[in-house]
Image: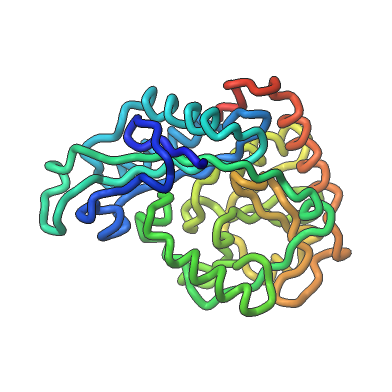
Length: 293
C-alpha cells in the first residue's frame, strides 16, 4: 500500500482526495519539488524547501505550511513507504478559492508528500541520452520560469514532442533563440576544459543539482561560466550533460541527430558523475541527514 502525507496526516494514496475547488486543480495554482532519495535520505532537502519558499513569494502565496511541518512530512513519507533508493514529490497548492478571490485572502494552503522506491538505472550514465530541440520556447520574462509551478504543460508537451522526434529529452530555446534548458533538467556544455550553462536570467529553473555542479566543478578545478548560450555552441561542445534532482548529472551524447564530441560521455562529465556517486555513498545508511544545499 502506497502512503502519502496529506496536510500532515498519513493516508493511503487510493483514499486521498482534494476539494474540487482547490486552485491547484482549477488553475495549476501551486508549486512542487521533486527530490532524490538515497539510503533513505532526501537529497538537498533544505535547498528544495528554500526554492519552494522563494516560489511562494513569486506567486504571492499568503502563507505556506511551516517549514518544520513540511520537513517532517517528507521524512514521514519516506519512512512510511520504506523508500531506500527512489524519489519523492512535495506538492503545495494555494488551497480552495475562486478565480476572483484576492490572493491575500487565500491563506489555507494544502500540501501532500508522496515517495516511491525507484533505483537509478546506471546505464544512463554510461551510454548517455539524446535530446531534440523543440518548437515550444521559454520566455525569460515570465515569472513562471523562476518557479516549479503545477502549470507544467509546456514541459509535458515539449517532452512529448522530443519523444516523437526519437529523442529522450527536450531542449528548450528561449523566445530570442538562445539555449535555455531541458524539459525537466538544466543543461551544461563542456568546452576547452570549462563548463558553460545558461544564466538564470535566460529562463532556466534554478536547479538544486545545477547549483551543486557549479560549486563542485569549481572545487575540482573546472571553471564554470553562466551566460547566454547560442544553440550552435551545443554542437561544437566536447560534451553536454543535463542535471536534475532525480538523476543528478547525466550525459547527453546526441542532439538533433548530431553526435556530441566522441559520442560518449566526456571526461569532465564522467568526473562529476563520480563525484555525485561519492556524495551518495557517504550518506549514512537509512539516515535522515543528506546534503542540504
